[in-house]
Image (tube, rainbow, N blue to C red; front, side, top):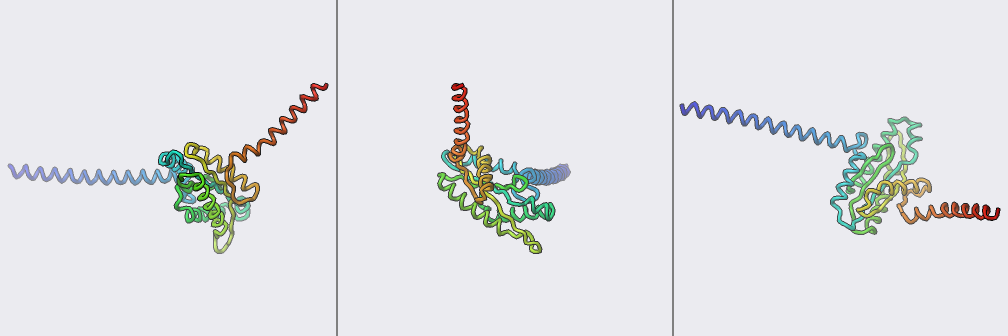
Length: 232
């Protein structure tokens, strides 16, 4: 009788062991599927860089890990002339340009907190937090120059050696203003693109100064109109 009990106990242990192994396999498979889904949700399928959701997750992580008083830099890159390339050689070749640029960004800025493609021909590099704005600015300016040089030297295909250039906008803001980084870098990028400067840095005081003449002109016009009305 005791022998039967022992055999039954062994059989039960074997069944439980098999079920435990199966449960572990299911858990590992579920974890793998979740990891794949998470990567797909935060990665640009064409270039392999982070997408907009991935960038925002990196921004959230940076915000939580940074210390009060830290400054964070962002570089926004916009390719020059990609539309003409698409029109001339087709969108498939244009995609090859984007892939080549993304590879060069990955090679150049692999140490950065995040490298992402926002969509179209816009790319973003988020740098790690620095204790001072000077350090953050110096690192961003050096990396922006390196990125623009690297993109300009990136050959897409050996049989069709097309190269492209990029305009870069940099923004350096304190941690508590990180939510304004993308907008600030975008403004700087458009200034670089319109002035053909290659790179430009966001400077809030400059932006305000740029608006003053328009406000003064409007004010003078109003005052002039008021004076004419008074004379009439």
